[in-house]
Image 1 (cartoon, rainbow over the protein chains, first blue to last red):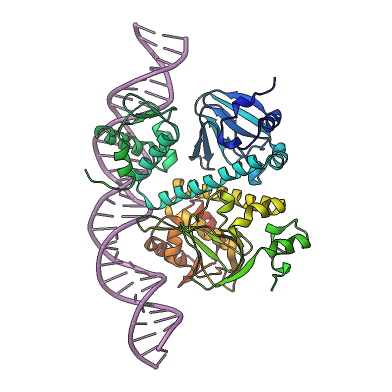
Image 2 (cartoon, protein in one colour):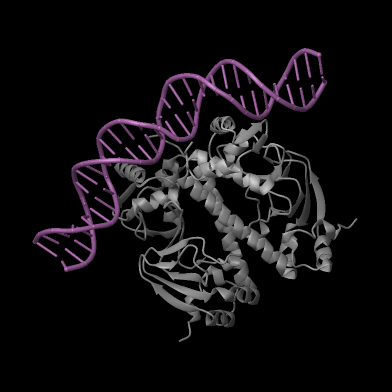
Length: 232
Length: 232
DNA sequence: CGGCCAATTTGCGCTGACGCAAATTGGCGT
DNA sequence: ACGCCAATTTGCGTCAGCGCAAATTGGCCG
């Protein structure tokens, strides 16, 4: 059962490919489903595949030797991930966990050199992705170096909302389950501090939140907080 | 006056190229000298070139709107830098400052697509470099999220020593001028705290340091500190 | 429908690291 | 050789945010 090119036709990652090329590219892939909270791949494991997320949200997490977890990023629909091959690695540098039920395309790791040579546009797009991730990650280093916890959490929420926000009656909701602990692991703080911040913000009408759920009501105020303006 | 291929023949970045290919690659380049403390390129500026460092050390610094500085990385001999083109950018994301007198090779930005296609090995090596920088930067995020200042500074020093250490009578010295302020900007702390740490470490015989100079005497103890072991 | 458990909230005390400020040092240019 | 200035050191007070702990909540499973 061949994969249909309509699966990927709209994605920026494959922009510039002809219909035939998409078909050929897909011939090397298979699709797979990962239920919520299951691992797509694990840190240090042999990188046998690379992936494109067709549907859902993936949490990429690094675990330290002493048991700390840090969320490296969330992957959204249409993005490549697990591209150890393109980075010159043979093992995955982090864990990838399905934040909701997910559908992915899977290519064998060994096909990367062939595919990136055969479809230069696809290769270039992928490398661009790596490039922007490097930029983002550096930005994050800058934030962690120069900003207070409140600003960092505000930034993180804004990023999530822009990346994956879903409009609702009361505001823009992050459209996958996310706990205080998760937000803490994205921002280098503790779930306690995140909880206090969200409570305070809810008091002020900036967000509404509950179990594994955050809705931003007043993005503008959040932007102000993220810039460190503390005025009332 | 053509550039001689012996300039780059030994560098891993150009590994896999034939002598003729190196000559051809160099035909697109020119060399330039940057005295200590001058800028090779500046943040937000149009990315007209990309570079390979032939000699010296380059400090890559991001400046925030509110005037904070963060050192993104140090570039050592033989590395590419300023490769905005490969990342799909048209401006530089940071400043590059010569930490000592430097010699660099310069290619016009516009040549990148051609060169990476013409010399796939060179392209692949460059992308690998980007990949490892992404890994490193993520590691840094993890450190900033989970470690105390003392551990982070210890890690930073160890990295510098491994990357650019020069053996001396008393230990391994970082072979370019580096201030307390610089170390602070690498680790997300203040020059005061760095100064206190170095003083304490000097007391214990782990390092020797002076003006813009740091020598690691006992790397082993420093590794212990970087792992958080605080035992006497 | 009731119980169980994970997620969240909140109080309290502590402290690592910062901010401010002043003193000191070392090296470089004239 | 001297003076100037940037780099460094160090003391002191403060506080943001953590660690610990206990209470509360909400939803899912049986």
